Length: 448
Image (tube, rainbow, N blue to C red; front, side):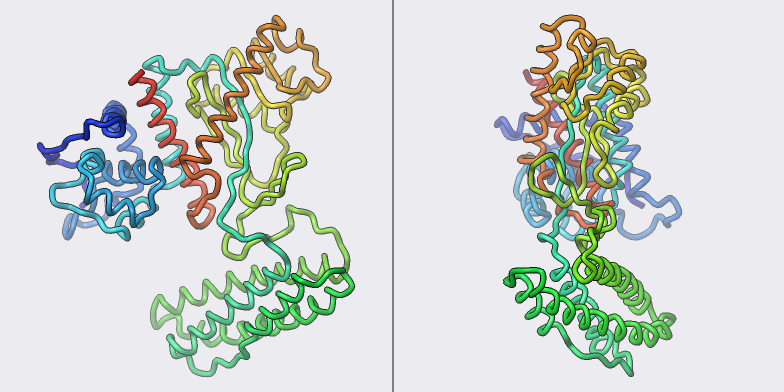
């Protein structure tokens, strides 16, 4: 059975006499001061029903520490495996058992088992440590939202149709050649669909594009029908092994997505209907992706997150939103979350102009916020928000600091674009980045 902590730490652990080595040593000490963090991760990695036989696997704290190394240094799993073997400082921080050198596949399999909710809880435990030691007081907070992109290409109806045709055809090829399912018949339209997709891309004018789309839709519907027949044949073999059941699930899921793409293409291109963003599918690989539009900026494809940071730039809280809700609707819930998480309402709250409204101002005051500042007043009087104009300007300057926090998260911790697959993977990467950022930030604050 997997151990929670390394029962026999090496006496040879050492950290390099370098700024990075000192930082890793301080980060390790911080994690030791919060033993509840390992206890929270333990439930994701240890199966109590498993028999105490066989290999034990990496200790829970080693998995967590390896995840922090990966996220804080922005390493691939291949690079992480190399540094864990090569660097004494990395091995000391990771607390790997003596002689154990994990492979990249083992690192990925273990790190991905930590659930998004667990990352969120351990971040809250870390922030409780920051509050108890005085690194942060939670009295003055600032809020802002940003978009984190998913790992998808620029979507278009033609490219999505081509993706669906390619994915279903590839699955039918697998069923016939690798799974040896008899009776599967289909025509390979991948080359023709790819050619039509290129023609759609280079053709200008809706009138000229329409017949090209009709031909592409015809191929997509034909592939749907062929995959339906193949699905019937493979479903009969599900009892022969999990590989058949997995094929059935993948094809069923892909068919549902392709059917949705066909419907939205017909509505938009053939019928000339304006399809709402909430009803659009923008990726067959990451179907959870939302369309994010912020002001007059370019459209982004991913998920919107709201961040709440304190005086020292620590991320006290974050929410990953569904769809593209307006900032104005999220202001009061974010303040209420501070009460739920930390047991008190901040005395001062600074936020971007997108959160500004009369109901939000009144609601914040009713909750017990003494000083409120919106970067753009939007008709609100300064004396209604803050006690003095000087304090209002101070809070506005304080709010601007959240932009640097977001910039650092995007540049140094991978929040510009999430590379982890699926919605759970996306959420886990966002929270692991926030946790790693806070851990590094706290180590720097203590060192100074």
